[in-house]
Image (cartoon, rainbow, N blue to C red; front, side):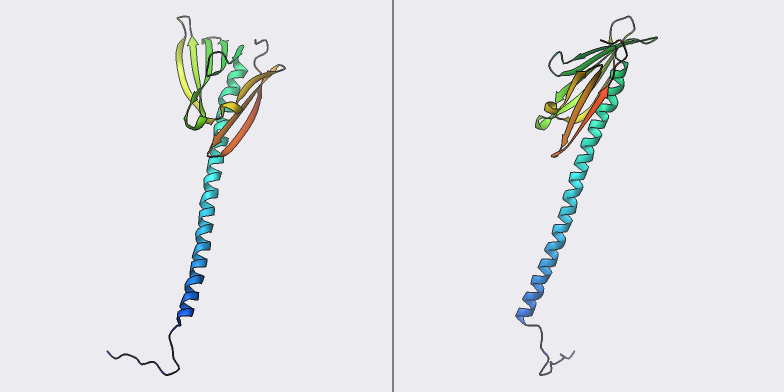
Length: 175
């Protein structure tokens, strides 16, 4: 195999040209990398916010119909108890629903729902449901306002926060 000889005025790249090409390649690669990282960062923030939104929606989904059924509403009580609701339903006996907050990591809490039914033999636990996670206890409350109650709940996931307020009216004649 013969080596091709360069003509007198043919030359390769100079060191300066190679350095400039490498510099431009580095700038382009850096820009592409930063764009990709920003897309991933935005995706994570959006995902965290959507998780927070779902958590406050779940809380409203469970608490609102229970309060509407309630004949008795007690806020607070023992430590960790957010709300206790009671009602009597024809054919199914006495119902009691207790919403509690349980610690999870980072100072946030889990909202639990325990449903008890008493059909004359004493109350029995019917179900325990994890209603929502990432609940900020400092920003979550259940307060009376006129003939209704305001349920304010805040979820905080990865620095993304969502707060909702639900105005719920219990049955007429409830206490």
